[in-house]
Length: 228
Image (cartoon, rainbow, N blue to C red; front, side, top):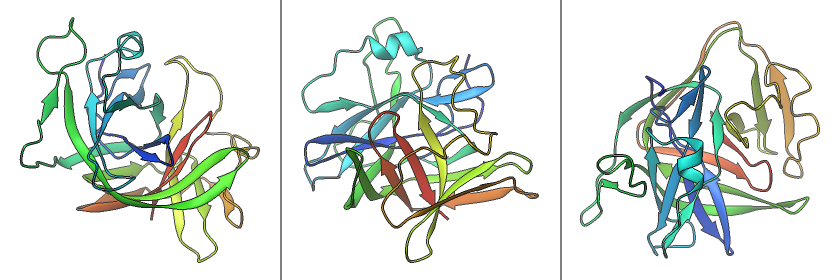
């Protein structure tokens, strides 16, 4: 089954590590009312962070896991997407295919281009986790509904980032429970940053018309947070 809205994710290479950065194309795989991102990424060579993100909305977890990754490509981690999302547009670049084929049993080219990471900077390391800030080219809208718990990180300068993607091993995961106030209390965050969680009384909307700034925390489980 597939979601009817749209969400996405992007990976970058930094210091030899693959970093998953979600953007937003919620046509990703969906099961049990949950939406997940299944992404393949291709480095552009423009800098250490620049990569194209292709997403499959028809793939199952099993099909995605079975993909043999070609040279020059990387496979993103599977993440559950927390907000509702809408894709407002897709990027196009000269000489870059808008879709590619990795799964033979799905007709056509099932992975489509949805975003590009254009630049980034290293924030630091925490408990063997790489933490980076990247600028992602995408046109998306996230909606965090009223009454649904929100998780945020705030940097030393007062900039706030909202959690929108979190790595899971399967579609039927039971932990963490993101509605719990204790869901991420033990999750490592960047030094000097603060974590907070609350249930909003009105919906929170995060819209990106050109560039979204995303905080990515690698390791297992990985997570992605968008700047408000």
